[in-house]
Image (tube, rainbow, N blue to C red; front, side, top):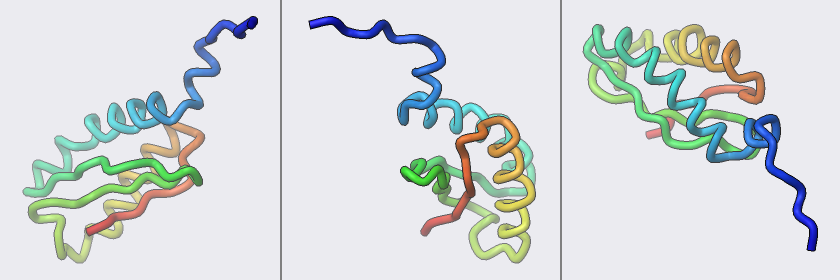
Length: 91
C-alpha cells in the first residue's frame, strides 16, 4: 500500500499541532494576565475551531474578564492562527 508523505502544510491542520500552536500563543499572553493576578489554562480546540479556556485567580468573576477574553486572547489567537473561529471561557 502506498502512503502519501506527510508534509508540513498538512501538519498545520491536525488537531495536536493546532493545540500546540494555541498553547504557544497563550503562553505569550499569559504574563500579561498573570501581572493582574489571574491566569488562563488552555483546555481544548473544538472541531469548529473554538478555543476553550479556563480562567483562574483574579480573572474568575472579574467584570473585565469577558473583555480580556474577547479583545485580548481571541484577537491574538485569531491573528496568529487563522483556523480559530472564537474563544470561550469554561468553568
